[in-house]
Structures are given as C-alpha cells and as structure tokens.
Length: 305
Image (cartoon, rainbow, N blue to C red; front, side, top):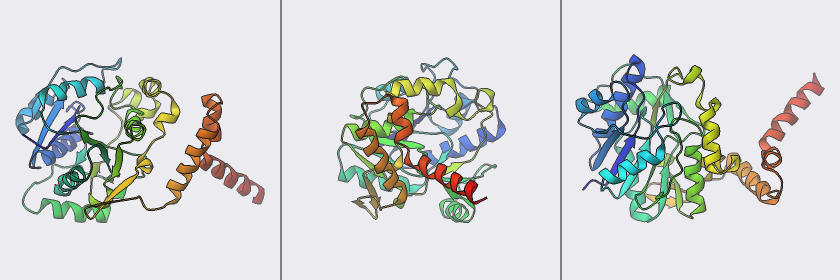
C-alpha cells in the first residue's frame, strides 16, 4: 500500500506551454516512492498523458457551470479508488522533489490529524525537464538564482490523513476560495496546520490565464462567488499560510516565527471576533487593518505633495 495518493484535475493539454508544465509536474510526482498519482477529468490530451506516464486516470467527475471539476466529486472518487493513509490535492503545475516526501513522512510521524501546506517558488519554465540523475540539484540551483518565493496567500497543495475532510462542500476547483476554506476547516476542527516551507522547495511553473473564461484571473469569475458562498462567507476564505500554527524545521515541529504578516493577521482575527455582530460587509471593512495603513500612506503622500 502506498503512503500518499496525490490527485489533481489538469487543464486540457491543447496549449503547448500548459501541456509541457503539466507533464513536467506529473512526471516529478511519479518519481516519488510510496506515492500514487491520480488524474481526474476528460480534458483533451489527459488520457494520453496518463497512459504515457503510467498514471491512474478517472475520467468521470462532477463539474460546475463552466465545466470545471468539483472538489467534492474528486475527493469521493479518490477515496473510492485509493487506500493510501494520506491524501494530497495538488495543482498540476507544481514540481515536487524528494524533500517533499521526506517532510510528509516526518510530519505524519508527529501528528495524527493535520493539514500540510507550504509556500511555493515561482519560476518560468518553458521546456520539458530532463529527469536525469542530478536533476533535483540542478533545479534547486536554478530556482535559487531565478525563482521568487510566493507570498503566503498562495497554497498549491494540501496533504492530510484520509480520515479528515470526510464532508466537503461542492467547491469548483481552479477558482478562488476553496483552498482558503481548507485551512479554515482545519483550524476549526483543531487539526494542526503545518507549514513545510522551511523544509521543502515546491516549484510553481508560471503560466498565464488564457485557459480561463475571458482570460481573467480566477478570483474575478462568478464561480469564485459560488465558492465563497459554499465556504460560509468572506471571513472563511481569508485563511492563508499565515494561519498555520506549526512549522516543520529540521524534522521538528515549532511555532511559526513572528512576522508582521502574522501580527496583522492576529489583529484581523481579533477584530472579526469583536465586531461579529455587524453585517459581514461592515466587518470586512473594519477587520482589514493593512488596508488602513495603505490608505494612511496614500493620504500622507498626497498631503506631502
């Protein structure tokens, strides 16, 4: 039995760049021992890519109005076809290396109920990767030289025991909100949310948004509004990696290091609790203290000019 099943719903393989980075990502996952990979959907070129890479393919999945898959259906399919004790939903443009599985093993040995996530490194990759001996070392060196660590607002994978998230709203994948809800749910259930950033290098292969309706970023689409409704409101989709309560550092779990981001997040949560009796829109305006700072800076610049 495998330790971990990674699953994803890739985009169509019709765009040459998207096809390249998805094959790169999927191939990197297949190189991890004790890991099973499942792809879901009927997108063009997916069946062929799955056969080429020796990956299990589950074509039937429920979809939203735009045709994007629903996460609840993906989860149900994976639970039915995998026996792994750990499950991981991941975006199909993310490269994983051996440090990822090592960190997952370490965290799973220390906690029973948890959610694993990390910040990613963004980098332009336009050609197929050569997975020859030494590829990880070469990739790490290139990422350090050319990549950029993404802000804590982005979460591109979630790993958790299969006993967690047994009930899942029918979120639409590839739209904003569902990933933030994953963190919110874990904190509500008092599972440990563990940031693996100090222990792993997760690489996001940059791409544009031509695959989305109108070429818009996913947070501007109507299905994002539906995800927010399913999540229970805006407050529940404000959760990010800053809400992790532990970090994995050299094989040990430690509290996250203090930062201004975590300080302001704590202020925001306090204000949301204090003003919870107000309508959501008013609470949203009150509870975003960093907006105040930006407005104040703008006013000061205007007065000084």
